[in-house]
Length: 582
Image 1 (spheres, rainbow, N blue to C red):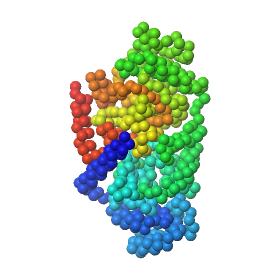
Image 2 (cartoon, rainbow, N blue to C red):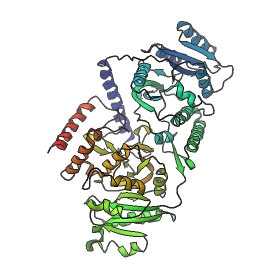
Image 3 (cartoon, rainbow, N blue to C red):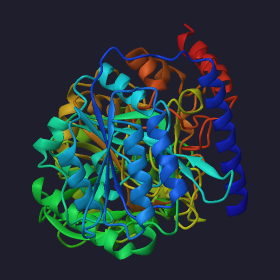
Image 4 (spheres, rainbow, N blue to C red):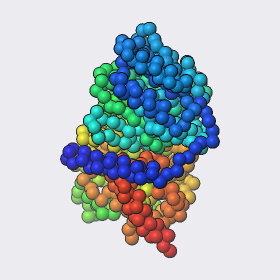
């Protein structure tokens, strides 16, 4: 299975390459009207001479000409490196060379290079990597369009040491939640001189994860971090790199940067644990001493198996600690005579703080408003918690004042991920993410099994505070009979800059395959879909937390192939006809 996935992924990589190639041929070269000086900082140590020359030529060949290159040699023992660099200084007056007497590490060397720079903007380049020839030009055009932007990061290409093997990064727009869990930003980063001064310059003491520390610290000094979705940087992946040779130093440096971030943002950090991938992290914060939780069980009108519900409630009761209390709202038909033998109401009443039944999904919002609780968890009746700290994970993630709602992830009986969020625009309208990746086969580029910001989450696993629910339920703009209220609610939260998060450390399981059928257009969902489209229009077809390079036809986070846009447009047009049909 792994080999099949690799072959499919490589196919899409090369298909994406061809798509970009044809796109570039037909695209006119745009020239920016502004002309800021960009300082390119390159710390150097014992670089392979051919790779060093490739790096230098990639800068000299830039379409944009207003730059300076600051080369700082960190006491390389190979004297030929100095000779090579000095020759380039003689060839181009924009190139400057400095050398330390003693080796001091990449962070100190970068700091020294910055102190010699004069640019309005600073960009960072590793000594063995290269820039696309339109890199600086694209950045300046982006600055021209986004005048407030003072921290810009782009996509990049990962080049293997094996000829012809490469992959395109598929990054997402800025998410602090995701940045804390892993440094997905990497290259190419460009910052304004003003921001860098405000931050206190480039710092020492974080070797191996200096980029992670830098991005986290920048987030505390600016609200204008922007993503430039172009592949401007060529990263040469090598086993001789610092992160390969000194993994623990990198991890320790990231831990140090994360602890500093939590302290600066008043988070009550308890611990930093390893994430599911190398160099990923999961923070755990202190929560309130007591929470009163309302768990609202939903069905899709097909599943009426009381045994499933009984198992779910039993597992929840076992995993909720003594500090928290659970209240339950359950569909009325579970109380009917036909289920009474299998569903022992009396037995549950003796164990539950509160057990209530509601008559219909249509009146559910009213039923909830008449109860009292700290948090609500909407949960499909087929779902069972898989880990003991599922509730702690949801509560601790919801503590921030900028958090709107959270979803746990859902896996099937094979431990494959079948849901982590709803992706706007997928398959021409709406669909779940997941790709059936288990956490052992999954790779970090999949954007799964990591904490992240998302644009919408499903009612089947929807966690929200009472305060947020009451505020937004009262100002509901559209009435939905049952379907799509979760998408509408998610979008209204984001209208006021509240985040929606997916937490892969809170896990539920199910064997129900039709759990997300309500997201697809059908005779049962079309009226609600039309109401949703009337309210939100084309916002439903563009997900701002998803990469514009990534597949929308079912292979989440795979690069788009040559035919992708044509197939997608065809699907989307059919859906638009249905939504606009009177």
